[in-house]
Image (cartoon, rainbow, N blue to C red; front, side, top):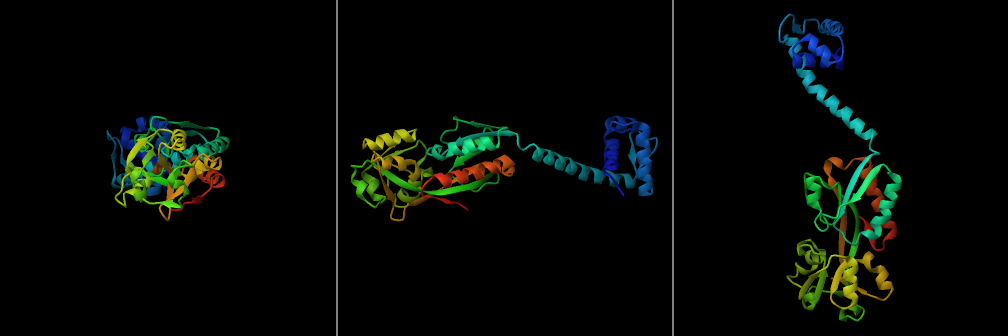
Length: 306
C-alpha cells in the first residue's frame, strides 16, 4: 500500500512546513505533490494532514506515517550508500605499517601481487609508526598494521596470517651454536640484541625469560634486522628472530640457529584493521594474498586459524 515516495513526502512536509517548500525539496511541482498526497490519503482512507495550517499539522494517521518515515528512510539511505561502497571497492587506499621488522622478505612479493590485482588501490608505507603502529590505526593515520600483538578489542579486527618458529641466532663460534636448545638461564650471561620495543612485547621475554624470572646480562637495541645479523656474526651478542629471516645466512655459514627452550617458540602474525573495514573487498584480498605468498615462500611457517 505504501511506497517510499509517500514516506519521503511526509518527511519533507514535516521538515519544511509547507506544500510549496516540500515540492522544492523533492524537486517536483506543488501540483504533482498535491496529487501524490491525495493518492496516499486514498490508500490510507483518511486525511494525513490538516489543510491550510502553517506550519503543517498532521492527523493521527499522518503522525504514524511520519514516525515510519523517520525510522525507515535513514535505513534505506544507509543501505544505498553501502551498495555504492561495494560497487566502488576497486578504488581506495591502503596505508600500511609493519611491526614485524623481518617481514619484508615475504611482504614485498605479496604487495607486488596485490598491486597487480588492485591497481586502483593506492598503497603506501608509513615510516612514522615503525615500532608501535597500533596508535596510527586508532588515530586514522593507518589502514592496516602487520603485528604479532593481538588483543581483545571492540575497535580492531585481527586477521590471522600464519604462525612461525622463533629461534636464537648466534655466531658459528658461539658456545650455544652446538646446542639443540637453550634455556632461559643460559641467557643470563649473554648480550641480547633486540628491536627497540618494550621487552613485554617480545616473544623471547613473554614465553621464555619472564616465565623463568630470568634476564639477559645486557640488552642492546638495534633498529634493523640486517644490522642485528651483522652484530651476531661478529659475536657481539645473540638475537631471537623468525627462522625464515635467517635461513639464507645460516646456509652461508654466517650464523647458527638454536631452539628457544626444549619445545621451541611458535609466534603468530596478524593483520590488524578497524572492524568496520574488514569486509572491504581489497582488504580481504590483501589478507588472502599475504597468507598465500608467505606460506608458499617461507620455510617453517604454518596456517593460523585462531
